[in-house]
Amino acid sequence: MVAVMIQGTGSNVGKSLLVAGLCRAARRRGLSVAPFKPQNMSNNAAVTADGGEIGRAQALQARACGLEPVTDMNPVLLKPETDTGSQVILQGRAIGRAQARDYQGLKPRLLEGVLDSFARLSAGHDLVIVEGAGSPAEVNLRPRDIANMGFARAAGVPVVLAGDIDRGGVIAQIVGTQAVIDPGDAAMVQGFLINKFRGDPRLFDDGYRTIEDRTGWRGFGVVPWFAGAHRLPAEDAVDLRASRGQGLHVVCLTLSRIANFDDLDPLAAEPGVRLTMLGAGQALPGDAGLVILPGSKSTSGDLAFLRAQGWDIDLAAHRRRGGHVLGICGGYQMLGRVIDDPSGADGVAGQVPGLGLLDVATVMSPDKRVLRATGTALGQPVSGYEIHMGRTDGPDCARPFGHMPQPDGAISPDGRVMGSYLHGLFSDDRFRAAFLARLGAPSQPGFEAGVEAALEDLADHLEAHLDVEALLAVAR
Image (cartoon, rainbow, N blue to C red; front, side, top):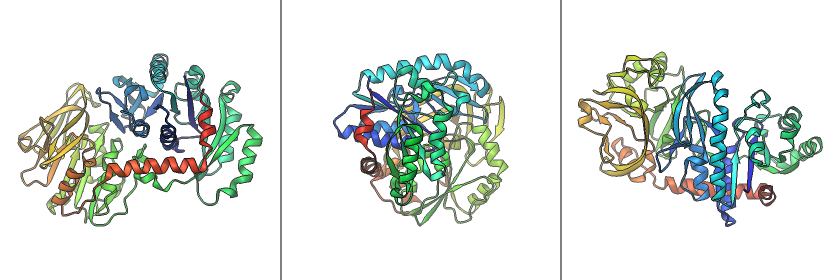
């Protein structure tokens, strides 16, 4: 086993991109390298070839390695459904729901699966680069931890700690982490790096030496802010931002349990599209040409959230003005007349009225449909994936959105309201161009090539500012 683990001083310090860039750098050196994240919490999931689910960030990291994503790369995925409860995915398959207070009881079973997946992945590659979750300084979570030091100690994987200077207090972040963690955990740390520096890195020379002197850990470098990060899929919904394009105004409703929001990345990259992520309490702009209802991990819960913002009234007015609406997955289910959940598979058992913008109805069931799909839509090839519970039927399904090869989705009689279960559909250049042409907007090809170029730029960025050779040599 040869592996190194990137842990962070907190959430959102850039661990996912650091691992992706290091994976690409290792691949350039001719190594067979794979990513691994023991536990992830995200509603942004990717579908593997065998119909399993992993975090979307690990799928991007697999791409950086030149690999197809497999479930062993992220054996535990938590998909939040409420503020205190999540669906638990183990090695690609849903095994149930857990409240936060009950999750600790699952940890022994989950750690067994984590170590099993890690052993398989390690056996098939020269190097595994592991991403932690949150921070090892959350010592209240250390008992039964499987995401950071609990995994590192159990698997014998050395650690490099990443601090985020952009949020301030990076000296305290790193020195403080060493101060609060167990000495045995601290012994796993082989060094640190500083991420997201803005300005002249030499201005931090004294601070860098202070961290080295206080901790005894070696530094691997200071990474300036990577301006190309927006060209890569975001790991967290908090990273969503408006695009800088001009032209067609596309507005996405930022639901409280928004899922698979990287569906929007290809639209955000279009210079002829202005994408707005509409937050809670904001009214729908009157100049919106297209409103997107995205995927959701809690369709009924987010439908109630949507109504609480008054967006149902805004959508009705948008529709009367001749605007277009697209619902994807859970957003498609919301557009119908009713959502019937007899067993409480989506939350609370019962029926709730939908928005009534499509003449369809959805019946929820505990069975989950998880698969990759390829077909046609709008006369163009399209590919993507499905992750959903429930089946949707009704008169508007006679006008399907696409064929995968079975009919998928529905379109209203006037063609202005559309729904589909297919995630990732906008990544296909020809389909995206055809879709935007219907709305009078131009399209620029090459989205997937742009992601690949951004990964190359990310690896170049890390090579220029980190001692990558020394960092990878930490692996054992």
